[in-house]
Image (cartoon, rainbow, N blue to C red):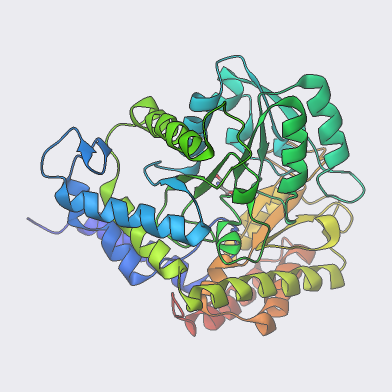
Length: 426
Ligand code: DSN
């Protein structure tokens, strides 16, 4: 068959964009060649509705092997008691958990979207907000930190059936223990969505949600550096919230409910090529090199946040514990929106995303903030010394935002700098 030049030329342009630009979108990363190969493999040809050993199709003996490997490696990585690797995305993983634990109209609590929460945590335009009744908790205006006292007051008043920890733009660690105490007071389920910090949690650099949460969801493509996809896990929840059976029995019966929540609840055939790539990525995440990578991601984020603060930017909560930071532009550039900065930086081959900041006066399409993260540039091999250089590029562009000559100059410097780094430094 004739090669589809049209598509492959576009793919080459995207490869060049990734290769010569500075990628600061906190949820993005670059996968290894072996993760990429598994994704583009023959496993895409196979239908395998069901689970390993219990499929609705013949010929599943090899997809059973890779799916079981993915499950086993994931359990080892997080010390989980049970795992499902089939969700097509983090939002699907969340949807399957909600379908399992909530009935339409039930109340649940999640972090407000404009305070760093995620669409699938109760936004009115997402199924989580359409089918269920979301109650928001918030960060404190002064400190930028989740206000657990207020969360408790709201939980005691509203009595949600589920409380959800996790965010897509929150730079600090979570107090899962405190949240479990709150959940226990009202007999609610505690769930964590660790899509963003999963890699840091896996190597022990952040608190472990599996110790306290009844169920944990994640994506696999952010800090975990795997293919685009989702997962669900259960830890060793020996303080049995589900009834009078033994803890092991609870895990067994809940896990089969969660499995049914994913398939046939919300999905059909699993993406077995992606699951094979998940197995590869979890194998990589179990190595010493991955732990060193995660330490560098965190170090780079700390240094980058400090460099922004030194230039007079308001970094929400004054810094970061993880791989990202949220910058409120309003004190330094009250007239400039996050949208304008995002669009302008793209012209200099620097990619960030506009983001609402807590108590933002602008809409999600404009925003007063930027979210910046270090997982992707750290995969490229950038270290602490490169962080102030990047912050300086960004500051030059924002400070003279309509200067096209400057943009051209910065773009040249960005391309020269990034051209010297491989896509995957390991
Ligand atoms: N879009 C992801 C993020 O950027 O955080 C969340 O789904």
